[in-house]
Length: 605
Image 1 (cartoon, rainbow, N blue to C red):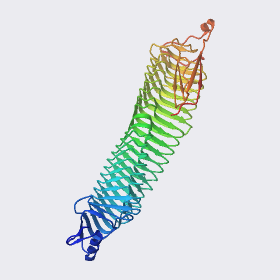
Image 2 (cartoon, rainbow, N blue to C red; image 1 turned 45 degrees about the vertical axis):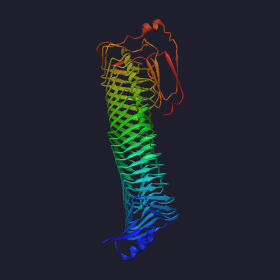
Image 3 (spheres, one colour; image 1 turned 135 degrees about the vertical axis):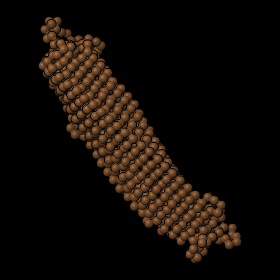
Image 4 (cartoon, helix red, strand yellow; image 1 turned 60 degrees about the vertical axis):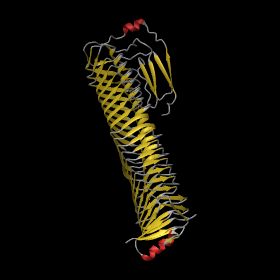
């Protein structure tokens, strides 16, 4: 049977004048006790032992307990607190030393200390309560927090440490100076919570912790919405992060699983994986990121599946020795590049759709920089669907480029392999190689190019086989300067332009066409060449007869002069081969009358 005690500062029949005297009386009887406290402020520190319930007789907020300095309550046993306001200064406001402690409809105010400290091997439950200024600290025990509010914590609102296991549900954490919740070498779950205004990551997992997050809303944080570091693990499901610097981050060997989340208006990145971290991100949306939607760097290696990127600057960037695998990815309406792989990074893209972006895929770096793209569509990309440079190596299989200036381009010493791919309705060229770049294409189809099907310039090497070029306005294939290679078992169809405009260095074998093959290319009639400046990529100086594209140059100066040719020399030029099948032709050198000077080092991304 529970013994009942009354406390009233104004006295009364059988009433104790303070709470401590009632506690002493209950301890002497060694029975379960219920202490009912009349409204008032009690300047005392409570030490509660045994099975005791402390309740505000006239409801929450009517009883305030605490001294000017020190703790308000220390619990040893099985203690329940209902409706009290507990105030601590320069010490733990409430401490659970042994046993269990339950607080409901209560308030804890900690001025310069810990609001609640649950020590090892204890169990603490908070329900429908408020913690102000201080933090709830769980070290080695268990905890359950339901429908609570944490406000203005001087550091972390909730800290789960040293093997503790804590569940926080349907609660609100606001304006913490550091983290909303930090779990370190422990296990925490955060379900159905709202976190806002934290100084650093709203949710932080470190030191091999496990963090489970579901159905949460995180807004207006100064750093990451959710951060996993130091080999921590966990899951994040159906959570929305808005207005963070980084939406969800992983670093230093962490490996979270993130599913069905929405990351909106992040000031820098939506998903950020670095320093040997991994992570799997499924069915997420990253909307309007300020810099990069999905970022992998410094050895990071995420897997991204079924995600959608809309709006913002750059879609996916894999740089600095990082890796990444991206499948069933949709990228739309970016002001910059959809996919970027730089500086010894490697990425694989499969089942990808890119629409209405400034450029599609950019790859640049040394020979360790690689990208594989399969079953992808680049539609309405303003500049190039694919542009690679440096010494990078890229393979494309079953890739479609529809619209824009250039389909697939390779420059510097890079190598591009294209298989079973299609380019339609580009204004410049379907595919091109320049510098010392190598373009190897099998079963490439280019239709409706505003100028060229494929071209090579500089000292590039172009190897075409079993490819088809239809309705290209100027030429199906064009080669100038020192470009070499071969065109084998290809077809050029349509009624415009020429089949091949050559330079004498490219062999044509079993070419099927009804158009002429120009051994010594003539400048086609028409308006002056168009010059297009594309930043953040390799330099593309396209065929001088029709289009020039410069990557990474802030200033392009074109100097055009009349190239006076002797009429007798014109008459001496070799006639082009015509007919349905022109076999084993070797093109002569192509003339040019346009010089292009480029200046500048390229713009900042």
